[in-house]
Length: 530
Image (cartoon, rainbow, N blue to C red; front, top):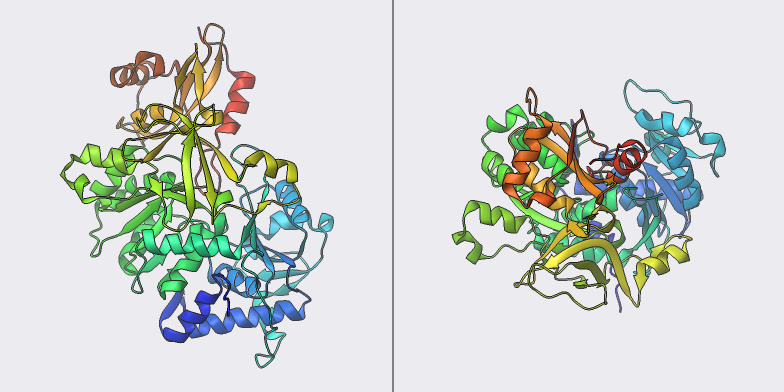
């Protein structure tokens, strides 16, 4: 009989073969796979008793805790749809998302409940399940999570649900780097295939100990939520991203695998503790979210011995569609050359479908590393569409191909490398300038901690590049010195015409730079640069 492709089935397998294996570590709490299975089953029973049926939507706003992991499995095994929420959004954005998603109930962390308290009376439901957090209190009316589980007898039977692999598993709202959040419909099948890619290409093994550095709400933790359970590995939860704590966990929990945006990598290599620890096992890290500079990858390898694995994708693609496959022939290259290769987005994954780069005429670009086009993809992991938005869906998916909005080139070996987001490409006097390329140069400067390059208006050239820089602690460098440095390392017309030093850069919860916020600011206030 046909068996649907659903990542929920991996929980069954893990309990069957690894019942006494530690499944989840969350600060001072540990759960075996048997215990984890019992808790997720109990959550499913409690939700069902509360009226949640197959196809219903349940909003969840939790940091990376065992409660968040339990929600993925407990909600989705009912055939209900989980709506993971970014707790770093504004109350107004959350109100829009929650109501737009048609959620019927919400599970919320007490620390972040203040955001929901402001909008509770405007939501389309009144039922809250609250995860207690010491030192925090909420005025939301609801039941606490552990009490909620106890409302239903453990002997009560689980509802029988026939899951179609093409039905919704989660409704993930885009992180808002360019526009108002859209509800991305991801199916059981697309999540299964994405997690299968995670398993294979990140070489996940039964003995792996995985640190959830990446917010689980983001495209379902890039697949780690499902893939580690599939292998019977151990999930280590991380409530807040603190570099020193992460480095401590590397040692104390013998972490072997993690994922995170380049900004997380940057935080780790620049923490003083990074040069003190001596890792006893090889540590693999997948990075994605925004193109990482080759210099940053080199630092991660030199300082922490991290085996960096560059992957690429979007919420709309579950999320992975490319990875930078490492070949033995690369070992003979210099460290700089190796880092440059690892900064590429790479080639198609094994279980996805087809990905390529198309030029303005709709033809695949030449494999010469020069001709630029837009990355498009089709296959097993592409979203079903944007929730309640057929127009945006039609704009994004054309003739079965999803258009990513990312500009890239393809090298002779088929490896794809992003040059920029379409909206981030700077066209100055008719010349194309990649903000990503310029950022890569600036990351090599010893005084630069973080950088974002955007276009600002210019009377003569239309627009010119501006570098917005966060300096290393106690560093001092002038605008002129930065510009001279760039001109010495790249074509003069690509160098920034203006530089500004700031304390921090705007980012999403997953560490992506929000350049649209910088553009909005500087296109309103920036003076013309002559």
